[in-house]
Length: 164
Image: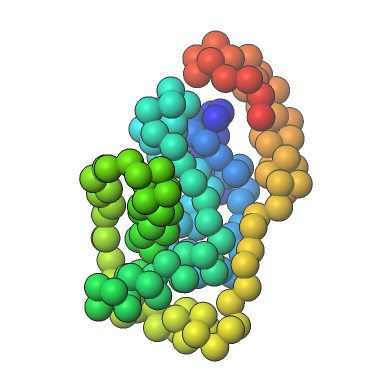
C-alpha cells in the first residue's frame, strides 16, 4: 500500500493504492478488465484498515468457478465477475464445512459472450495457471522508490504503512 501513479505515463497524480507498480505490463491472461496495476484507492484503504479482504486467483481457478456457475445457473459469466464467483464459492464451502449460516452476496457485472475465445481455450486445455512474479513487483517498487526517493517517508506519514 503506497502512493503510485494511476497510469504508465505518470500523468496522473500519485494516489495511495495497493499497486504492482505503474510500469506493470500484464501477462496475456484472460482477466480482461482486471489488468490494471492497482487497487482502487477506496478499496485499498478499506483493505488496509481490515474492513475487507482481497483475494487473487489464477485464471484456471476462475474459469473452473465460471464453469460451475454456467452449469448450475445457466449464465456465462465474464472472466472479471468469475473472480467474485470463485470467492463466493470458496466462502460457501467454508461455511458448509464450519456449519456457519451466512448470506453471501457477489456482483455478476458482465456476461461472457465477448469472451468465447477464452472459454474455448479453457475447455480445450490451452489456458495455463499464471501468477505474477513477486520479483517483478519488487523491481517495480524499487523503480518507484528510485523515481521518488521521498516517497517512503510520505507513505509512512500519510498512509501509515511500512515499505513493501
